[in-house]
Picture 1 (cartoon, rainbow, N blue to C red):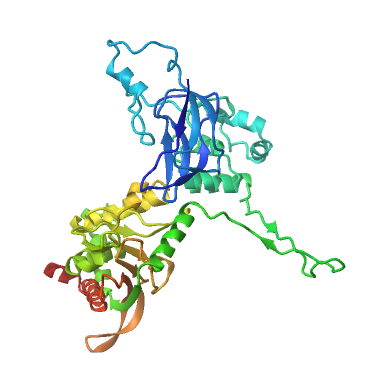
Picture 2: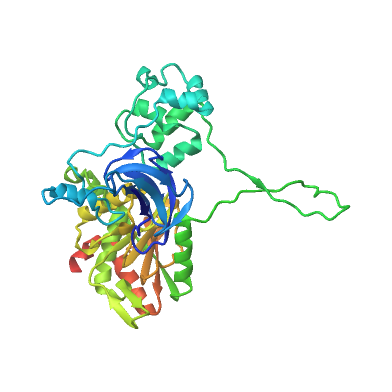
Length: 459
């Protein structure tokens, strides 16, 4: 029986997703929960598990196409689903679970404890025989570039790598099957791709330039400068979502931004002391960790910056918890993953949460659920060497703090001019919820905590 699998709502009411790559093809036999494809929503790259066991009958969308939620994505020929008698009472519960998969998009209950097998991938030898580009890479590689085992036909799982690394390898013209032969069983990184490309001389692909057509009246020669090239990039994925969210925020919430420069010399000295403590060696404690902790403490005294304006209900919602958003620049664009209940975390707990959040975001594995529901955000523009800015509020939040670079500057200290470490903080807030005085008090509280970290004992 032919059964269609429609694109599910992958979280937060997203209306569409782009097919990044198919991991199965028509005619392939798939197991329950086997990964069918990777799709990119406006927030994250998601792996879609199969809700059925059977044979792939057809694919309804090609890689690169955008599919609406609820539209057919793939069709299966589910064996035994038609023409058989009703299930007997003696059938096991496990069999019943197989026949009725769980909620679409979240995976079905596995039929056994065994890891589901993935579609067999081409070996390096077969890939080379079918692709002129791959053959050229192998021919150009040194004799030790591809181990003998890679030249033998083999089957198994696709090379282990993250979506950003796969996209990067594609841009560089590198076959990850060949890289996997050297990387072994570990996850392939960008460094592995670079090392392989540098050795075999694979050039990084450049964006294709599209020449604009110039309408020229009859009898008039072509423009003297000739063709002017352009590169057009589709607006989709994270960039599309970010643009929509920023426009919505900018034209809905009246933004106000307040700036303050603070002497963070004591904070930087504290960080040096904590890093020198061997018992804390496994925790990455940096300036952003102390800023995040200071923000959580300051929000407790200034709750209006942790509130939400509910237009539909005509209410201001005060949140008695802090879901702290941390803006992260990734290969896919700007995302803001959330640290849940950040106000309850210790300094080391905050450091561990930030480390995990950053690693997950850079690997392209941040899920839609991890990007939703923040109550206040921080953007660290200091990592780019920027001192200050006017950040735009994430929709639904009443405050966002931009953290500038730490610079040594002449500063008044104890009645004298001294060289101190200075940071500029910029807080934007929704003036419907936050008055200027409240915004200033919040910024002063954060600044006081960074200027004298011991004041945290008073909060």
